[in-house]
Length: 287
Image (cartoon, rainbow, N blue to C red; front, side):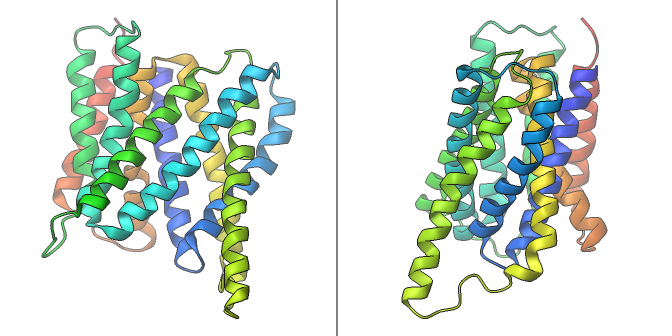
């Protein structure tokens, strides 16, 4: 039961981080928001890792670092896919693939659920599509390049869950420290390249950054917390279950958008939220 709660909490927290990242991206370049949020997360996680019992090891930092690299590339591809659109199709496609990959990996690796767990997992997958689907008037068919980016992003996010699951169980928070360090370093290099190009053209570099700082700080803390929660959940429960629950992250974003930005939640999304909670409750039934 507790593992299910942690998995849902990670989804909500990822959703909060995405919402804050989206707000920040309205004020300055998305890659800057993502890079600086990763640095903020690293600053938060280093002292936390020293306080939480755990053994630093090569394996912890190796798997954590590879997951950070995978995550950085996945974020780039996700932004690229959503920029091409339509978001109403490509966003749930990415989320479902991010759940299917580790779920399949876990089940093929020998994880077993009670008989009612399998239809419950299917229910969560359907809920991911319904929650992430935002009906658009006159939506066009996705272009092949957009589908390619979305598929690649979903596969890499799924690989992220698998990589985090490989970290030693006694490594505390050190894997997520490695994750944020590598992810932040990769993204800062990209920011540096963009900064040099902007200066070469005589254009202002990342306008709006000053006003976005409070949002970036909050985003970095939320993202760090989400990574800690998914690491904890993977150590408590099965990869197949935790990855599917974490893929419900659009729910947190949608809920905050409704409360803060007064955005309307479509009826199909309410159905998805209800199905997600029902399926999660079924998953929590002990064998």
